[in-house]
Image 1 (tube, rainbow, N blue to C red):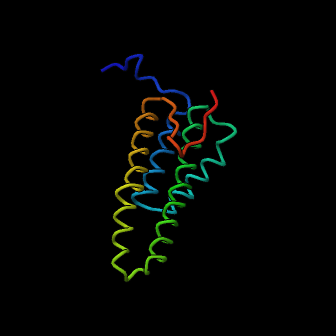
Image 2 (spheres, rainbow, N blue to C red; image 1 turned 45 degrees about the horizontal axis):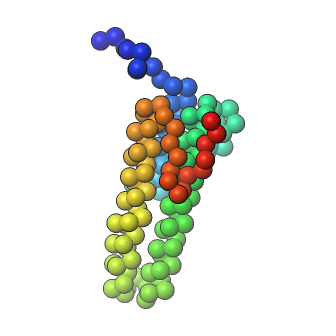
Image 3 (spheres, one colour; image 1 turned 30 degrees about the vertical axis):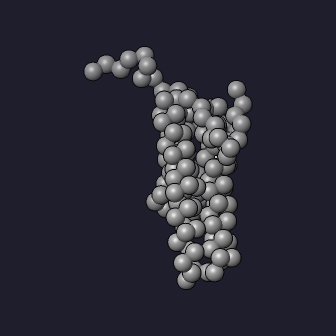
Length: 132
């Protein structure tokens, strides 16, 4: 089946998709490791990559940092409400995962779909504004 004109890849699209995949993998599969790889890609390509890739790299790094901050806040709330042996632990964890974590994953899925479509995407509240 011949490729249509709509199947052409935007400059930087592969790197944009890779950034979004690493963001989701950081949240769901290998926290920390994928963040380090994402940071490496960001610092390596932020000055030389096409605008689409830079935009997605900025979004995913910013959202990953916010995800880490929210995780620290959840842990502090657990400690302040009685520690990890308290019943409050489950309340904080359930609220965190239902609200924060699932929202971050959903934003990552939207970002991945935009990257696969060759479009820029700015994460609401968490993302850095893209040029252009």
